[in-house]
Structures are given as C-alpha cells and as structure tokens.
Image 1 (cartoon, rainbow, N blue to C red):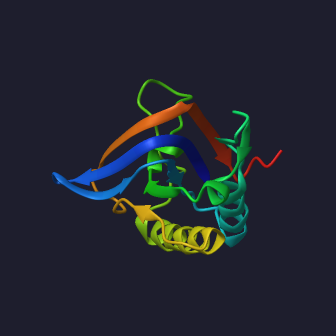
Image 2 (tube, one colour):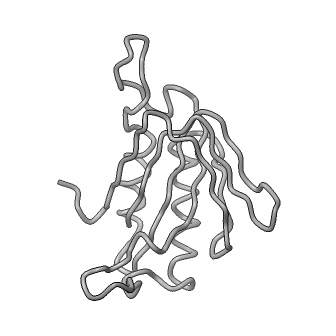
Length: 150
C-alpha cells in the first residue's frame, strides 16, 4: 500500500461540479492499493499517518501530529501511485488492485484511520473522476510505502 501525505492549509474534492469533501488545516492522503496488501499494511500505515509529526509546534519545529492539532483528513483512492514507468513512456498499472480487491481494503483503511484518529475522515468517491484541489502547506509531502518499512 502506497500513500502520499500532504500537509495542507486547505483541500477539497469535487465530482461533477459538486464538492464532496472540504477541509481546512490538515492532511490530504492519496492511497494506492495492490493485491499483496492486507490488514497488517492498513494497521501500520494508519498508525503512521495518525502519529507522524509534520505539524509545527510553538517553536516552529515539526513536532506535532494530526492528532495533536485536531486537524482533518481527506483520503482519496489513487491507483496511479502503483504506476510502473520502467519501460517506454506509457505507465503500466498492472500492480494496482482491481476494484473487487481494492474497495474492501480501501474501506478497511478508512475505518482503521478513523479509529486511530477518534473521528471521521472525509473521502473522495472510489473510482470516480475527481478534481482534487489543495494548498500544500510548507510544502510538506511525504511518500510512505507499507512494503518498505525501513
């Protein structure tokens, strides 16, 4: 499971000209799922996201987590995180899970993240054509792959 975590001043998801998710200070989390992912990947990643210290404290040091700041999160599914670009110029998405595998894992990811945070997270719509807007704060962008825990 791959994630791209962006610290944002604001973020939104729009589908068919309708805003379906909207936050101020918090995180925008893009999630890519592959067939090899399981609940262990979900548990590890959601704990990491909830506790990663990328928000500034009173001394302007990144020392606070999203839990500490009580910020909000938008989670968006994004199969393109598993793009393979080694051959040619057209990415292959063969490693990305098909919806029958990805949707249950995505839903489990959302449930576990909400449990870690103790509150609801906002989401896009799995498989929809989404317009994601954000103001990256910092900028702070972190990529985490549950298959590379080093």
